[in-house]
Length: 458
Image (cartoon, rainbow, N blue to C red; front, side, top):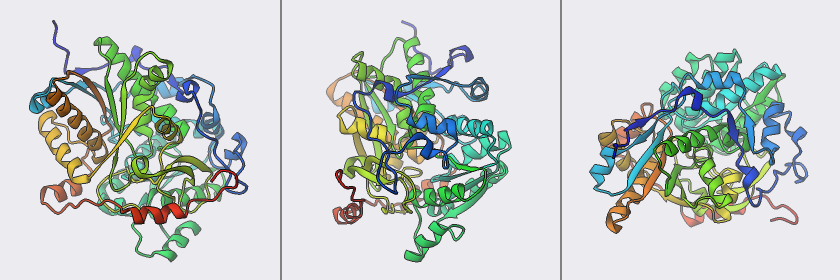
């Protein structure tokens, strides 16, 4: 039998021409977003002051199964897509496992991650609408970098609010964002009302994605011709990221393979939602039954220890409320090295699927994550981003179980990007100064007590 190649690339003709909308096949849809003013369901037009119109429509569209990818976006994708599906032969050998391990590598662009898939789409629709500027937040910096690339391509000014502890840990992200003409501000900052209010309560806060979202949204709604764009969590983002899973499934079909287990790191849900989309479709429609596993940091465990409840998507409580697994919008994660996986909530789509039993979730301490990252790098020669290494950890654990049980399962995981801007984190792990942090039940309960009280719901 012919050996399966190490790397498989699709041809340009095989690139997806449509995004896949997972909501069209869900048995039960996520609960609607609610207005922070009156707790009534949000309408599409209510989102127009925040998002550009086409993205607001994609956010609210629960019926359209496949959405055409504009030709201009397809052409942009061809600069770095298709991304390779890689068989991890060396990792399999090192683990002495009968399992077959595949990973979809999304790090072959300057942002170093999958984030560019949605960034270029959102910048395209902003340009099409004639908007004059955009704002966003970023955690580890991958999204901010990707959006700066996309906005530079279309000549759209961009302001990025970066979580303060990440801003300090990753100074070279600032240089790249500025290379692409983006303005970057550590959050919380004194440039917005929301930032000043957060700093007044805690001048030494290390920030959170919830804080940065508050600042970015405020900037958008108070600036003429400006809109806010987000790199994860939202329905529209999972839609754009479905290209990851669609490419993966096509490549595996070419190899006559199908995954028994699909694994992705989970922060807000963009990578995980994109990777699992067509495999979850098979699960929802009864065509196949793969195990789907979300892996999150033990320091910010929204799925494994959060509450399934309506919560604000930002710390300043200016955004619509979403029903999701959440740690509370006031939760400030530890300033550790979990990268972008620091959001207090999880995508409403993924939260609903998890709540209904279609997927699993595990949390991992960061030292175990970096142990897996270093081991993987030595076998496969790619230095993974800390986010990606969460999925690597779980994939290795599953492969070891296969060795112990004598099971030859097929494992697919998402390698979301590279770790070359995370050398401080790698240094901390290698010199032994890295420490694990897991929030106590008391800390989480304090955050849960602040969840909004919505009449008739919670």
